[in-house]
Image (cartoon, rainbow, N blue to C red):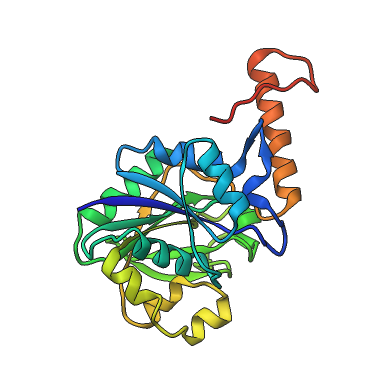
Length: 262
């Protein structure tokens, strides 16, 4: 059995065109993601799957593995085509690593893979981080997940769940969904052939498709959060934070920068 990490990377993002090639500390974003994923001891190989030759050539230039796919409506569809191109077997594990998560940690991917491998009842698994951030709890762009006592996903939502009817006001504790997935290859191909259900269309959350069709999702706790980059403003905030952290750590004067990205 092989475990392969695949980073879907699309150039024509509506909110941030060319996002995978955005510069962070002298490296394109996709390189940060690839290098961090490649340091995971659980992944046999890491590939970037893209529909754009600029991204393909950039990855190959820095020594990464990249392949060209067709145009797809979702990263999962791109992932499934890449798995077919690579000739992966039904029992192999495919890990979907978001290309706009430059702070992903190898340890997160290790936990995700181990969580899927240890329980054959689950065809897919994902990560979640426990937090009490009130702003994120109310933010519809932050996906929340509720689970049962064994870690099986009960529901994913953009709404504040679980709703705290009788608890006093204060910071809620909830599970923030992190958009990394591990699939058994046979199920990945099945998943992309399923029809979207009502809940997926309402919430605009693709993982609900699996649940609406009766498939189980295991949710693996991650002690680490990540930072998705969806817009140029998100990137600017990340760069400012990295610059501030570097200055604090090195005693540099404000305005000086030291690259803390791997």
